[in-house]
Image (tube, rainbow, N blue to C red; front, side, top):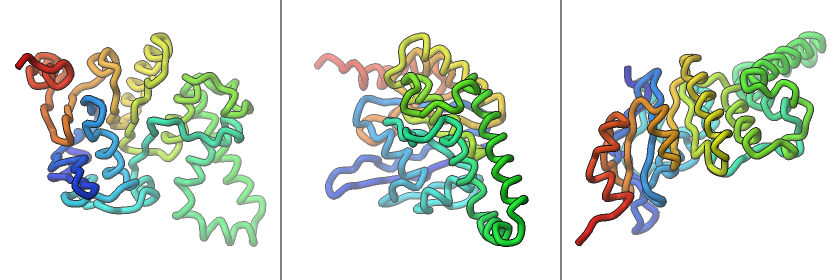
Length: 258
């Protein structure tokens, strides 16, 4: 089943076309890789899907619903979460507080009015909700083997754990679809191997994963299907084996003789 798709998505900045008529589909339950040389338009495509940017033309459909140009917070509440190339943690908050923010964000709209009146009518009920958010945040930290770090400041974590914490915060919104933008960037080989195991565990929770990544070992090892962008256009798509053997992809990365 197709969970998300773009239809001829285009994003132009003046005369520069960063994404050019890209039709891209994400199948439910799979790990999908989005690869391409630097400047190929990968992050721009992510931004246009997740509401951080607005396409010039084309559509984004999630579960058959048109979400083109919807704001990022509404897209998140629909069930799409993401991480970023550059880590965006609240570094002066604790590890568990960072994850709790994800839970608060998920419940904010649907329960904000109820929580306002609860604050007036029942302090106890409000406190119970906060305890539930805390408990769920701790469960996600245990999922990442970070339960013992919950009271540490986020800025004091090793780099690899900061990457994982950002993923944990995204998962705290209970997404159906998780976008990871270069999750292995800056990681050493041991951290990357651990990350691959985590991504597989996330998929096993019935959360569909799409990732941008330059680490080809990671991409070829865990992705079920791969889409390749080059100069803002879709160059190829297929299984890891098909992509590995695709001459156009090889040329895009390595060039070709005149």
